[in-house]
Length: 156
Image (cartoon, rainbow, N blue to C red; front, side, top):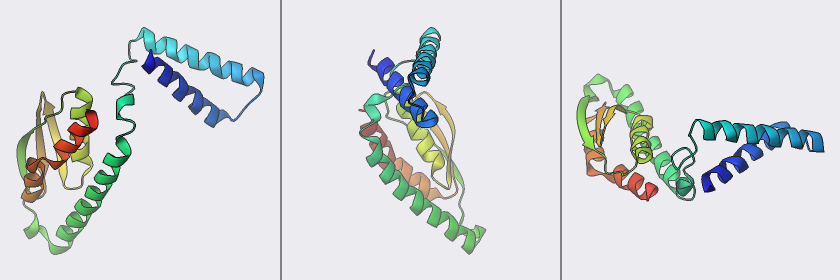
């Protein structure tokens, strides 16, 4: 019920921000639209803790700030390697264990690796991620587990 209420409020706010109408007729039509979408969402069984990860809401800003710092550092490293030439690139593959308990946690971890320049999560099977990196040191940093720990804290 909590996820349904959150979805209702989110859809209603989104509708209101996009329409801007406050007449009774338009608010009624907006409410009918939101209720219809909720009905469809329940019929196809997509309203759950993963489609509405409310528990992540208050921890996400801190994680995003840390990830932004990591993205900036990785961008600088990639630009530096482009300027210095391909002798400074040491591409490598490895498999990394994810310690997250939920599927959404594993996906956040895999996507965090992928959006960091110079690394790509190629495969995610169970709790194993196959990662390609432009630099061996990126893989060493991932194996040290800082990002893994932060995502695990995010999902708890």
